[in-house]
Length: 119
Image (spheres, helix red, strand yellow):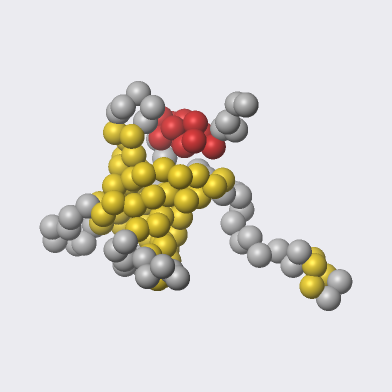
């Protein structure tokens, strides 16, 4: 986008994210305290992280584990850290997640979600 004749880039990510709609279960790490899983939906995704939309807030800086279901029905867990969280206009919450080191199998699963849909 141009502003005053200069190119302004709003995307700070090194790897662009792809818009998705993936239901997930989020298991917050509350320092050993029992925490119930939070249901949510990933709204964008890349190999480095994702944006989560949920009805409950997550604490910035905390670790969490995302559980999503692969096409073969197997649950896959991804370790992540919450890098930002905020209330949105619907009085629900969005959170930015940064994935920890992915295994080759986890990276391959993410790549399946990122592959263009064949028409």
